[in-house]
Amino acid sequence: MDLTVNRVALGDVRIAYRDSGARTAADVPVILVHGMGGDGHTWDRFARTLVQAGRRVIIPDLRGHGRSAHTDSYRFDEFGADVAKLSDHLGLTSVDLVGHSLGGYAVSCVAQERPELVRRLVIEECPLPLQSGAEELRLTRRFPTVPELWHATSSLVRHPRAVLAFDRSMTGTALEQFRKPNPEWWDRLADISAPTLVLRGGPGGMVDPEKLALMYAAIPDCTVTAFSCGHSIHRDRYREFAAAVHPFLAA
Image (cartoon, rainbow, N blue to C red):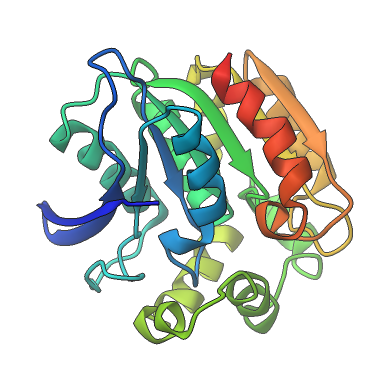
């Protein structure tokens, strides 16, 4: 699979991405967004499937990951903003978004902020933010610790380059943001107009079932598919993952 590597300055950060190239002017690209601790190569197998089916595939490395630049700021909304800015840079008016873990959070932010841009949305094993301060106190013991979060994210990395490139300073910052209530994110789920497929793992997964039920109710067109594996469905249950996601994106 031949995907060209490009780098572009998006505001204050330089983002690297790979692009299979457009097949037709009417092509709706699929943007695949990785989770924390990895890079875009985690999607190589699924990208190959999509390209063989005639889809244009774009795979960014998030800020602080892979070939993209490190930065002083790693706010979750900035990861989503980078994906939206990359879409604008490429002149895209309609995209399908697939995001894993932190990447799932990023693509959900794009779908909230830019509903007209997103045709289809897939969110895989995204740890859902807290809704209120009361919930923060109630869920303290249930939320993963920094080592647990790092283990879950680094387990999807298959090659040392991603580990060496990852800016580990964001690990604590990410955990702080997941522990901080984000009622605005919850309020804006209703703004997502794209048909949405949410994938959740089984034991070892990081999706709270109670919050998932609220998310399902809030997004106007939402489907939830459960798997028996842990946090990295697209790696550990690839065939089942592809069987669920590929037809959804092809519709």
